[in-house]
Image 1 (tube, one colour):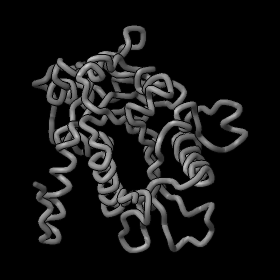
Image 2 (tube, helix red, strand yellow; image 1 turned 90 degrees about the vertical axis):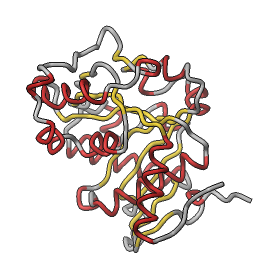
Image 3 (tube, helix red, strand yellow; image 1 turned 135 degrees about the vertical axis):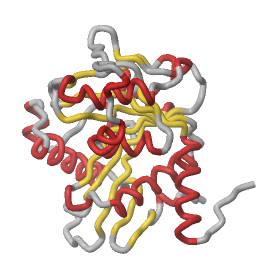
Length: 271
């Protein structure tokens, strides 16, 4: 008997449900959503094949789980997926040959911890669904996933939109000085693509202003205790500057449990 909630009906809030994609068709719909967000909204540069098929896909999709946000009130099954997140566990990455992040960052120290890892990527949600309630539901699904698979660290690339690092000198410097990962598991941008993050003196940074301007995904990670790797990667195809984010998953489950205890009065303590 499979008791993994995300393999069943998922987690719902009204008409919105978060669960795992159930078949290839749903994965294709998630890839079409990624195309609309990455290439049409944010103007990434597609390959000829990706542009022809109007879906974002790569080698890693075949090995990953795909968390999807479904709006049940939409009757067209080809338009019901309104958000997605790609989940690549360590055993999946070994079958794929590597983690996607390893194309940009040296993550050998993270792998050497011998802790179970989960790489999260290809995160996107339609603009009208980028609400606090939907994003909290998505993180609830992530918490369920990491608890079920006993994941200890999650990590992945998170992005600033643009390719000039000096446009984000305050934000990159803030992340470097205040949220750099401990050396024992710190990812580092690969030498041939390494872009320094400490672009201004620490004392010149307005922390409150930076927090207002950080991309929501990066802000969400650091607010619950996430870390940032050393160095950034400029991705000219996606028109982004990528940093590597790392989070001990105990911080997700603790934050999630405390949030729902406050909201519902439920007791999520475990023996």
